[in-house]
Length: 218
Image 1 (spheres, helix red, strand yellow):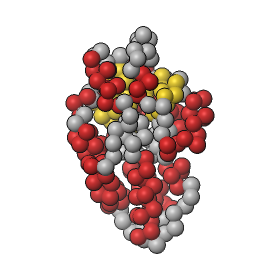
Image 2 (spheres, helix red, strand yellow):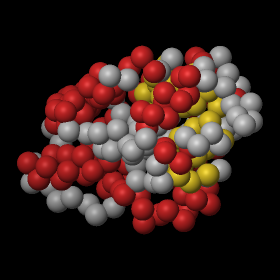
Image 3 (cartoon, rainbow, N blue to C red):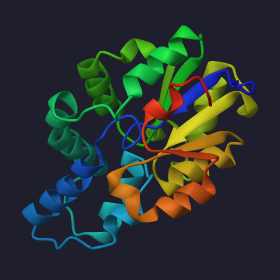
């Protein structure tokens, strides 16, 4: 049934956490406070980038006085309360992780988000103990769509690409998982529903929620 899958590696935002909405709001508020119009393609441009890569992009394209470190701290501070109290798990995610744990499938996380926000969310949801390793894009040379963040998690889990199943919600993340040589399941998210057909085409399977996987079939 598992096709030799011994580890599942999750993305966070839009995959486990229903959180993609928060980042466009943060970018709009952040730029508005500095009198900078929000470019309409900004979210697509920075999608999948690490916090550090995003800060570099902002410094290059906007007249900002803050350092890279200061930008990251500002964004973390703006998002922290939401990750701690307002962002929920995606439907069926907790039950699916229970399903994996019962079957002794190891779990990892590979995310473009910051460790501070990841830890705030996992603690608030009481799911920190589910994960054998957590890798953020800030810890590897290149963010998604490069495979680095997934290959790092795989190595820490002691697996091979063929033993890993990735769950992702955005195209750069799907590309990253496939570039790492892993199976990738795409997760429905309202933020990316306009590219659903492309997500279906690029991934090995598309799910509307995790309840689809709880009938014993993968």
